[in-house]
Length: 422
Image (cartoon, rainbow, N blue to C red; front, side, top):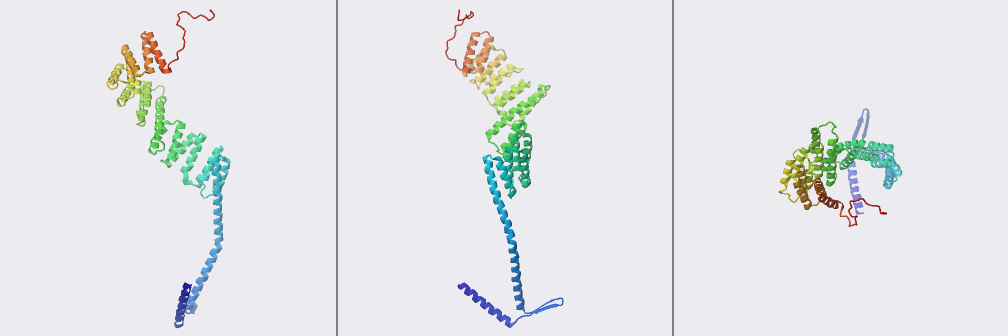
């Protein structure tokens, strides 16, 4: 209330002051345009300007208010469409999670037509169409997704690749994923899908080239990457010989195997199983001497009982040098059953029968093994020591198959058996 009286007082004082000014000097204004002139006082002109401003302001407000209902109507319609789209999207996603593909496709497609951001709707609807086996509808929905959101090529491409893989269209899926890899080279899920595609296509060179990128971007656990590296390496080594023409000579075949071995990841070249496979392929390629050299170097770098046992299986052009090499290992590995087995086999290659028997027996003493029993039994049998060979064979059989239960057996007879009725 105080403020009102103060404001009223100020207005009265201002009015009195202006009235005094108007009485003292009304002013004079002349407006002329061509032959028309207007004469008035300054205060009348100011009053007319104020009235004109008020009228113009009122007209503008009236026009603005006349257009407001149309804007409100458009806004209401937009909000209503969004509510409908959200409701249908929710129902469609629920139907999708429940496996109701037809219902999901219908709701999601209808929602996409009203939604301002229809990408998710089209992608989910495409999956629903695929689950129904409607390839044409799925492809059409993916195309609509591209038209609606051109910048979402990676997301759309991933869904397309998933659908192609599910259909068994491995080659088209590979083309799609390679394109996506160019767009998003660090995308871990694209790399995973590429890995799966290479496995389905048995494309081992492609997988071998992809694995370093998977490792660099940590798209898969380390142990899984290691298994994939070994799997790719095994198949690449197999293909290195199988892809060679039948008329290829041993040198060409060996070069093919060696080139593949050198292209493998460093971890693979230290894997015992792969080294065994590489050695076997070198022997198959007609390069036993090269296989012996490679194995000798591997054993020198890293002692491995299985590789030592494999060394004794290689038949080279210089078996006496092999035997001397293996004997040199005894200085540091005199308690190695694998080395004793290898020494026995190399002694046989050099026809040192007595030494071979001692090495086989020493191997069995250190660690009974089926190979040592078999080699010893075979050698004794060929030397004419039948009973001793039979005893060794029995112990070897029990080692492999377990001890047999004590059961009654017929007495050994030299004459033919008689019928029970005799």
